[in-house]
Amino acid sequence: MGETLNASELLNLIFSYITKISATRNHDEIIDILANMSRELTGADRCTIWLVSDDKKSLWSKVAHGIDNIVIPIDTGIVGCSIAQREKIIIDDAYDDDRFNKSVDLKTGYRTKSIMVVPMHNEDNVIIGAIQVINKNNDGVFDERDLERLLLASTYAAESIESALLLKEIEQTQSELIFTVGSIGESRSKETGNHVKRVAEYSYLLAIKYGLSKEEALLLKEASPMHDIGKIGIPDAIINKPGRFNDEERKIMDTHAFIGYKILKDSTRRILRSAAIVAYEHHEKWDGSGYPRGLKGDEIHIYGRITALADVFDALGSDRVYKKAWEDEKIFQLFKDERGKHFDPKLIDIFFENLDDFLNIRKKHKDGYNG
Image (cartoon, rainbow, N blue to C red; front, side, top):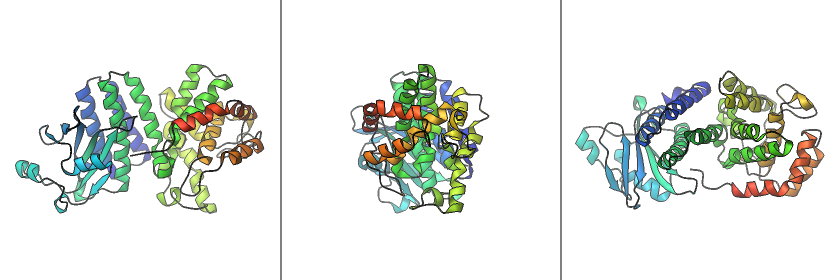
């Protein structure tokens, strides 16, 4: 199923699993739901979620579609290799790989062919396990798009498992998934790293300093990671082009704002309705020269104005496929020049008045291991 999902279907699938996870606090049930989500996202026949034992010497499968739970040494096989080397692995035929242990197949009569494994790591970058999917549907093989979706699942799985183990509030886990879903639009360009997390933190700081209530600032913090979700509807050749767009490519790229709005606008959830505003208006400009509607000044929702500044600050200061990161002084000069043009002048003033706080956020969430 995974390879046939369009952008809207993908989001509906993800949020259907959010609902299921929200309905339980049981650790085993959460892992079972996560395994089913991973299998469905990637179009796999089976999924196994492996967890590292407390003594760090073995791996145990809490969910293994089609077989009983098992325990193996941590340095065993393809999964062990993925964890030890912190590598994402795609194999077209397991029997051609010396790391594959055929004993389980011989015992069950199942024929393992294609395999994909992604390690799971927590906020401290410690590997806590791995997700393994087996046998792409219709005798196919896993590809980069499947890997992108399994990475999405692995990020949420790690956060959910840790949250369940620590008995954290399920709302916190859902909030983390919003960041992960928002990363879909960004993850297709690997340079973006923690972009959505930094944008969320910048947006919260700007909102508080602007005078929004803490409740509304937190709402924007949770909604802002979805600002570029519409990019999932843009062709890979355009998203990852290592250079400037031509006029036609620019027109296509600019549609991502409306695509994101269209995906989110009909939700009954307040956070997603807010995210729809952010997606639609964060490319508008204070002087009316932005897109997609050419809104001007206060016609632009404050969520859009705040996210616009946060997004541009982070984008300019980060390496991308089409450019190197700008020096800070060059960014600061642009902001001064664009005060009252691209950006709300009050927000620019707030930015410079709290510059150290913005730089500390960037340092705290600097790009690093992203797998």
